[in-house]
Length: 261
Image (cartoon, rainbow, N blue to C red; front, top):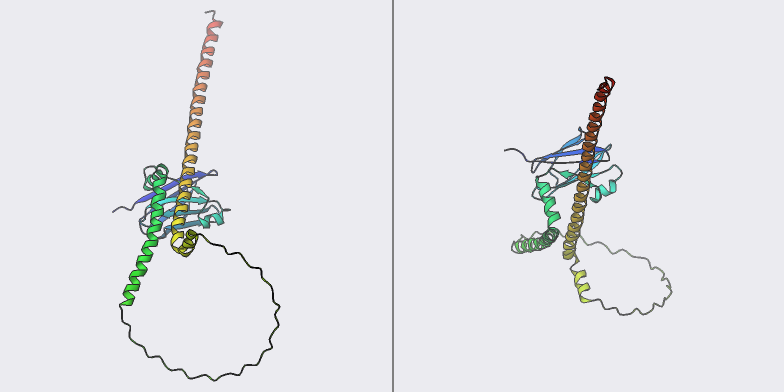
């Protein structure tokens, strides 16, 4: 069975970065810059970091099921952004690949993507609660043997010296107003450990949508610039050919004029 391969590439600051990832569980990463290999490593981490002192770093993200998501490049001066996983420049996945299909789905259906990610965060919370309940149910039905503990000797009472009392000044504090917190605020504070994963999933989904749109706009702009430069080059070539043919006609006409034709 052949291993699946996912590739990304992009030209950033005049240097072409190319990444090739092979494998599903144990993945092999090969990063090249301008055709020269920068590093090669294997890892099972879904958020693999490839670091190079000369060329910066790459953050390659896969889903929990091993599906490739994105590869983001960070310049050598973006160390903090690279550690936080924000900023950077996304590499362009190979057209038709799984990463390209995922990127297109995020751009075409942002609401559905945000809903799925938010429900995933909620499912994680519910799954944790259910797992804790199952573990508590199992532990409650396991009869543990009584282990006799050794009896420790009684320690003697140590006489403590009488310390002098310090006359602390009495500070009159003003009466604070009785503030009634809304019930929804109190509920959110009491259930914060269950609410924040859902909110975090929603915020991360919105950030991922903005990142994908920004990358798509940048890719479209670069493609339009390349097409414009190619059309300009073609026009220049055709103009040069027209000038050359005109010059050839003038040169052939001059001898005829000299012969009196």
